[in-house]
Image (cartoon, rainbow, N blue to C red):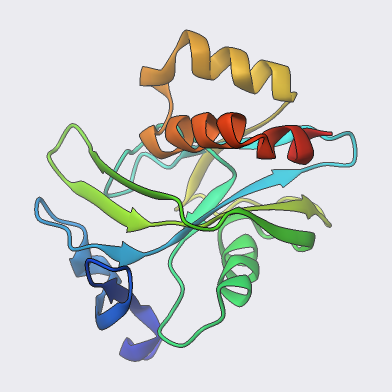
Length: 182
């Protein structure tokens, strides 16, 4: 892979692009604000795919989270990045991709002290093929109903990624989750 292909987009305080940094070097104890995305996959029955992050991941290893996350490359349309990561992490294709939280932003610190600090638009899509998860990214998969997801977030938020817990709260409060899960 060419080095330029693995850069993340750094953002200023107004969330405007302000430079780039190598993806593997950006997540530290002083992670700069950068651009990312999260995606929730639905199946034909409307269930949501949760994934358990590989234990080899640099941050939040082994934690259950939304279907997949990633970083767009400089000048890459966000929707293209979502499709690219669906293939890379889950070995699948998507349809009906739509952004449901365009301005979501979070900051979270994992047990090792590494910081996630991202403007992270949230997408929903329908899974349009079989799943072939990349073991470097995903340890386990589970399809859940929206009720099961809500119950998990309410009962054990500490067992889930902090960004998913925050996203679910915003999706619920904005009414967007009702439009997603219906």
